Length: 200
Length: 200
Image (cartoon, rainbow over all chains, first blue to last red; front, side, top):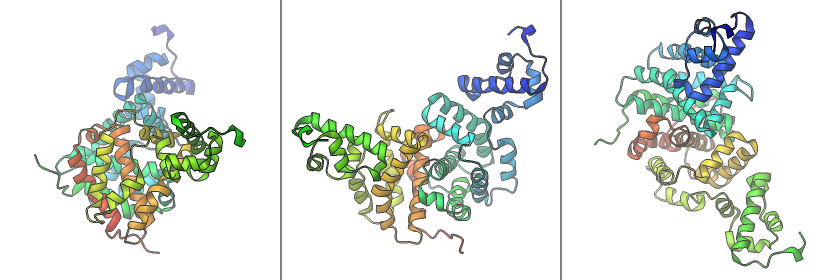
């Protein structure tokens, strides 16, 4: 877009234009493929203004998709006390965020569309890998950190799916304390305990 | 539908008409709400003919939805050797069924639509409760069998979601043996081990 076409760069109209351009770009090119430069161009503003308003690409994604949490804030908080009890803290945090949201929350919408559209799945996969899994993988002090992180993601995804999307009665009726006691140790085992994987 | 409108009741055209009527009825009324009588009426045949061709409502659902397994056959096979090692057998069975199917399998389609449409979610929930969970709940010899079954469902749902639908690289690349060793003990704990749930 020509420099003369750029917006002056003030006010909420500009921020909205950036968010709209970001949503389009993330959907079209995926999380990895979308660039701040490209999004700025599409919104008709200088890339520096995108950084000024939204910081990193991760922040911009969180804002554009209206996610209820910021991985770069949430993960250090979870990891800071160390790996001890991390499984239970993860379940408790997830439940407190999700139980507190309404029926139609944007993250559920993103997850639904990732289940049904390959392009949205790629975007979700790339965002999760880049903003969440890579940090967890680095924090794990055991063999096979990628597989361990994947299994943590599988149990968390299943908890979300059965409690919030499929709404299986037993999972809807369970209290947060019960789910923390039941599922926390699973995540803890995936994160820190010996897995006795087959060798060779 | 008038008796005179009924099909003579032979040949694959009749079976196809029953399957079409069943799909419509299950989607419209849910698994619990759909009846063999109603489906027969819609297909213009005698209910006895539906039973003759398809047996129980569960069998008809499996046939109409083209599910790759028959719970009333699969579950006794899994449960027959007892609760010992059941977690690992469950994971291995699931992987052998699903890894063997193509990219577009009907059960994945059902699960996707259950994630996005409340009516499909209700149908899935009712079928799973009636044909799968109730049998597992009865087989569990420990406190809180419904919650335990729900947690088993959550880890299985998450395994399916991350390996086959979202396709997280770590979960796609894991071998069946690794997933059996990693996730089997989770299911075993949910099924048979003390959960140390909060009291009161």
